[in-house]
Image 1: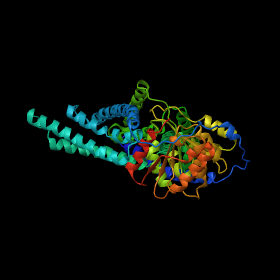
Image 2: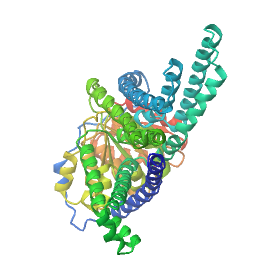
Image 3: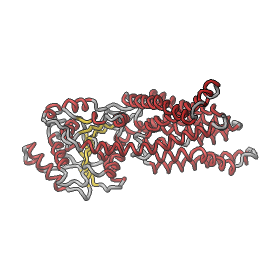
Length: 546
């Protein structure tokens, strides 16, 4: 049974990973379709103006301002840098703790001598996950992580080469061959890293990463619970009375019936586990990025555990202590090093609906990074449904109760606004606040969100006279005196004249002042795939008054 351990663990682990990718893809597209369909419906109730009194305008007075990037952007960078440094240090130490446990286990399994250069090479090999797992935590693009990973490998080669050369030529240790040590390091890294790294690259897809951790957790529990059930069935056959009873029937039928019966409590246990994770998330025990990174580390540790099981048998499961060490360091580190920074600068994201890819790119480049500075509020839409699904939303969707998340009455909206999450997560970032609305309720939701936002980012690419919803939003920005705190994202497809005339007309009606017609608005011209343009939008937000 000892020799079977790595094969059994590997098969069940591989099945869980494969099913996670397939199930996550199906779920996320199904979720997006459900959100889009629900938003096109109406509530079926009469629309009144009660929300206008419930959510008054945010400020009074009108004033225009042209943003010029300057010292505010630099000050904001200095505010965000300690938060990012905190995460990098804590998760780096946590990864080192996990690597240390795996190093000890691997060297013992191989029967290798604990020599300094060997310990360093093996530990450095197991530290590789620190690089890719920092990507979602620090909001770093995957392409940069790939470059950083190549640099990490290069640094390892250089250190081992120099160390081996010094030992070989200066200390006259014949066994310390630079070439052989470098080759052994690269072979070991390839053996341990290729599969987990491939899985990380696949599951880091921004449309899947929101639900991958929950799906993986559920499937791992379900898969290995089935393994325990199967093992229990086989063990029961060692008892003569059980074996004789079962032999009276078709063995395959009895086995299938046993697995079917066992699947019910196992499935229910998985569901309870997912609800428990969702509850922990709602209580701010961890953020969405932390949950994803934890799932990756669990994959990495389990992969290595399956490998060392070839020597330790089922005792190889001790490798899971590496994940325990990782989580312990993260918990202690975040508790000891608190996230101290200025308060929440709440950002409202508005956009022209119907352009998923470019909206997702804007959200990834600006919205996600802004979460180190403040919360991001938005009206839910199909264009960002794959980016903004939280554990609570997934549980509601799977259980068929997603419609309960949609605003139906004025009281529902008031309650939803009061529940907007404006506190930092343990990793120092704020959360996204999605408000689900029916077709005839989004206007009141917009008014409510305007009163709960400090800054506004409005994507007006492809804006034209046919976008009556955007015209309503522009008028509301004027009425709530938010023009001076708004960035308009435009491009060649934006009807700028319509934008200016809409704001000028509305401003004149509100202010009753001819001078109000001389309107100055803050716009940022971007190209759809220009990273530098999106960075300019992100920096410009810091220059707005709050």
